[in-house]
Amino acid sequence: MKCRHCAQNAAIHMRQHHLALCKTHFLDWMLAQTQRFIQKYALFAPGARLLLAVSGGKDSLALWDILTHLGYAADGLYIHLGIAGPDDYSNRSQQCCLDFAAARGLRLHIVDVARDLGCSVPDLAARTHRGRQRPCSVCGLVKRHLFNQVAAQGGYDVLLTGHNLDDEASVLFGNTLTWSLDLLRRQAPVLPAAGFVRKAKPLCRFYERETAAYAILRPIVYVEEECPFAAGNQMLAQKALLNQMESQRPGLKLQFYTGFLRARPELFSAPSAPQTPDERCPRCDQPTTAPGLCAFCRLIESR
Ligand code: Q46
Ligand code: ZN
Ligand code: ZN
Image 1: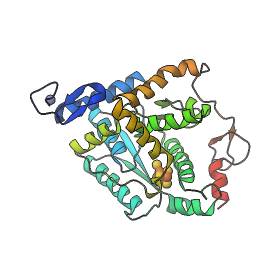
Image 2 (image 1 turned 30 degrees about the vertical axis):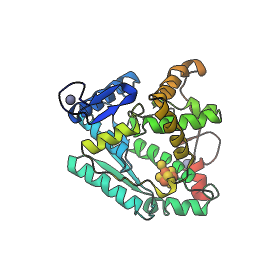
Image 3 (image 1 turned 180 degrees about the horizontal axis):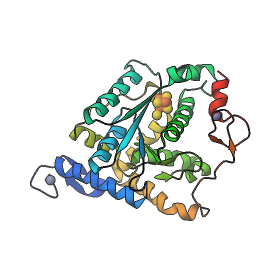
């Protein structure tokens, strides 16, 4: 198959877009599409101070690369969770982020959870009620807290994450199955500040296959292994189901997600901005919904 724009052989065929492109035209297409999404969803203003959460995986490093090519200066934030597993997951992913930043002269903040909070995420999960079933709930809470904290302390305007379409469609699928209205209301390419830092997902319209192809073709060195705790989680099962449907109906995942985005204003006629919580945690000063310590500080106190 040939590239739509030149005589080269296609490096990727995207059935959902009826589009085949060679390496050069695909890399350019990814940049142009990202720029289009930044504007279409008003993800951030030109000149905004950008902080990008990097995990060492393909999506977040591809996003960092794309932003750099587009001329946006984004600083990275890596959170070392203290997860080992057979692949020495946290150390290896941290190294990928360090190498990526060093090779391009980019600034990378590192928060080491074990060093800074006195105990790693798996330890914190084992010691607290919240994490007893699996560490992901504790992990998500810790990451959210630290993202907000680093963004506030560093004076950043927006926190960017590398979530792709497969992530978003899978979360949407899960939240629709349970009609979790609060979660659905908060699912969008951009979440206004509301006390916490503004959050945006510039890759939310790209298939995982596209971000993977970008990382491989550029090329970017990234950690291929998943976190060992990801195995068997609901997200992966939902992704597999959606992929099965997508193979019958190319474009289904994209339709599912973009259809939701179009329907959102009508579904949630109230303004989509989350309510600013009135209370502030007396220990960390982040917003919280009830008086007293926030969920994060309660977790830390209870270990
Ligand atoms: S890093 Fe943390 Fe994920 Fe690992 S412990 Fe679960 S939530 S699976 S994105
Ligand atoms: Zn071409
Ligand atoms: Zn707190």
